[in-house]
Image (cartoon, rainbow, N blue to C red):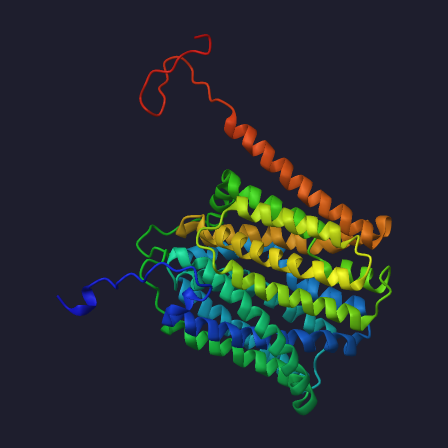
Length: 438
C-alpha cells in the first residue's frame, strides 16, 4: 500500500488559539483573507469619500451602503442554497473573481472620470448580490480546512485577520489616494480578490474536517430547496435561541459607535480625541476577545447567552460612568466579552447544521442579520432621543440581560416538565407507559 493511502496521524488535542494554523492550507487561507480584508477596507474608506465628493450629501453615503446591504436581506437564502448545491471551492473562486471584476470596473470609471451616483449604486447592488453567495462560500470553505474541533480557532483567527486587515486597509487608503489617486484603491481591492481566487484551488481539507459531501444526492428544484433550510433553522431550538440572543443584543447593544460617541461627547464632556481613545480600547478588547474565543473547542448557545448577558450588564454599568476614565475601564471587558460571544456564536452556527444544509442556514442567518443591522441603529437612536445616552445604555443592557435570563428560565422549566405518555406507548427503554391516572 502506498504511503499516501495511510490516514494522516491525528494531531494532539490543543486549546491554543492558533491551533488552526497548524494546517498549511489554513495558513494560506489566513494570508489570503488578510490581503482581501485590507483591500476591502481600503476601498470602503475611499468609497465614502467618493460619494461625498460626487453628491456632497452624507445621506447619499448612507444610501449607497444600504443599497449594497439590501440584497442580503432579500436573497441571502438563495445565495446560501447555491453554496450548498455547487462545489464550494469553485463557487468561492468564481465569486471572488467576479468581485474583483466589479472593483476593476469601478476603478476604470473613476480613473476616466465617468463615475456618477447611478453607476455607484448599480455597482453596489451587484456587489451585494454576489456577496450573498461569496460570504457563506468563503466562511464554510475556511471551516473545511480544519477538523471540527478546531473551527472556533479558525473563526477566531479570522476575526484577528479581519481587524488587522481593517487597520492596514485604512492606512493604505490614505497612501494610495495621496500618491496614485482614488482609482488606485479600487484597483488594489480588485487585485486582492484575484489573489484569493488564485489561492483557493491549492487549498486542501484537513483530516477530520466535516465538509461538503460530494457523494450526497444533489438538491434540485426551482427554489434550490430554500424551504428545507428555513425549516431546519426553525426546527432547531438552539439556532432560534441563538438568533434571539444575537438579535436583541444587536438592537439594544453593540452599536457603541453611536451610543458611546454621544455619551463621551455629551454627558462626559469629551471631544473627538476622547472618543478616539474609547474606540481604540474597543478595538483592543475585540482582538483580545478573538484570541480567547479561538481557545474554545465546543462552544454552546448557553455560553453565548451567558457572555451576551454579562456584556449587557457591563453596558448598563458603563452608562452610569461618572468619568471618561471609568468608562474606559469598563469598555475593555465589554469588548472582550462581545468578541468571545461572537466567536462562540459563529462556531455554533457553522457547525450545528449537517454539511449539506450549512449554506442555506448561513443564508437564513444573513437575512436575519441584515434586519438587525438596518433596524438596530434607528431603534437605538430613538431610544436615545427618549432616554438620553445614559438611559439608552442602561435600559438596553437591562433589556438584553433580562430577556436572556427569562429565556434561560423558560428553557429550564420546559426541560424539568415531565413528559406523559399515553397508555399503550413505550418509553425509551421499551417499558410500557403508565397512564396519567396510574
